[in-house]
Image (cartoon, rainbow, N blue to C red):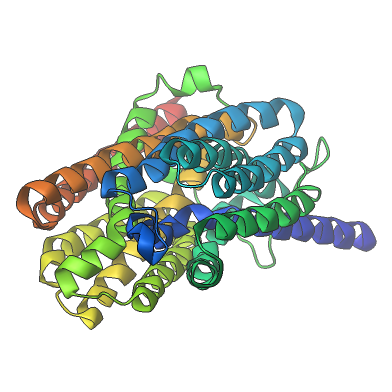
Length: 425
């Protein structure tokens, strides 16, 4: 019996590591801001001479396609299992980057390669690695496991940002994307072979020292609801709204990081800009891991309340961060809060709607993140063009976060009310 438990533990650990590694390989999405300055640089300086809008198009398209592909991938992996869908994700991610590098100075070519093909692969993979990892571990560890898996995606930008900067200096735009695509293809496909669901009837062992908690708001869930049942619940509507507006803040800062540093702080060094992007990615990763574990301890909604309040204060003060040290403080808070959101939401979705259909259910909920990729950059860029700064955007973000604190409170009350009705029945 002990040998069987040991073997199961090893298998669960292997799946978890493979899921983290795969997410790490597809995290090149977050390094796009390092490519942007080179794309907008003049042709005589090794760039493509694109406008800011042209350089932002592949990233904007990618966020929408990413979320849509995650929905499709979640549906497929619930039916077929995750391994083949994750494998397809690795192939498409690498192939799209190779196509982008081969397209030359073509806005349409790179937008199709990166924004459509690679983003489809990223969505397939990202949507299919968290569900199997959650199924291998005890329900009390949902936050920690989801935080580790999505943390691999955030951590990759710490690696990709400086690597992309070095490769751009040595080889130029096209060759850099081809090299990144080749690496993502090889490593991603290899990692995908170890991603699978546990056998039917598998019951994950409880962690050492585990004491079953009293029924709480976050555990008062409906088990194994289908997506059709989920979307008609009031809780889903509130969760979708929170995800949409809260992630808009993180996406806005991530997508505008280099522009914020240049216009607000006066940073022009490509090396420093790359470091800031890496630092943002690092704090994002810490938020995913620490925030997920925090939600296991204090509850998903309590963790979101803390991060929403922190982000609200941060956005209200962000216009005053006019030095590199001050900007770093703002980046730490943005990254931590955004990372916490991305680790708590899949765990909250599993809490409320069960693990059986979590791939598709979370894929639908994740569409909120895709919409934020449209709302946040468009709003930030439009207001920047109009006012010459991001100050108006910061104020709007602070107001949105204040509203999300209230919505989170209403969600908690809704879940508690359902628990009372269940207990009465």
